[in-house]
Image (cartoon, rainbow, N blue to C red):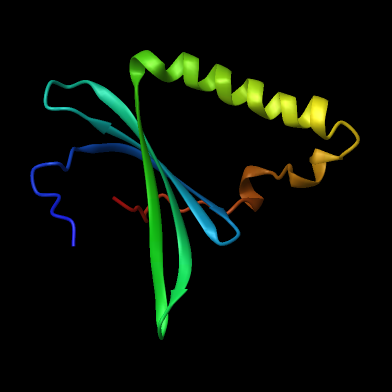
Length: 109
């Protein structure tokens, strides 16, 4: 078991996005020097023995990288939508926020 004592930071904002067997958590946290960073966590439920376990992967994103990260993500999404799958109708995945499952109370660290 991982020991996270001393590594916890104050959480400022949290958003959960359910996506099939995966859940994504977007958490804004503060540093000791009152700076902010974003953690993006993918949690995937997997069957193990007689129950389930959650496999988690986490990315720490710092303010100086926000713009570069967003630009690269948008470029990658645009490439898939416009170059690789231009005939596919992605609008079927567009939902109103009220239809999307969000739960700001649950989070994974």
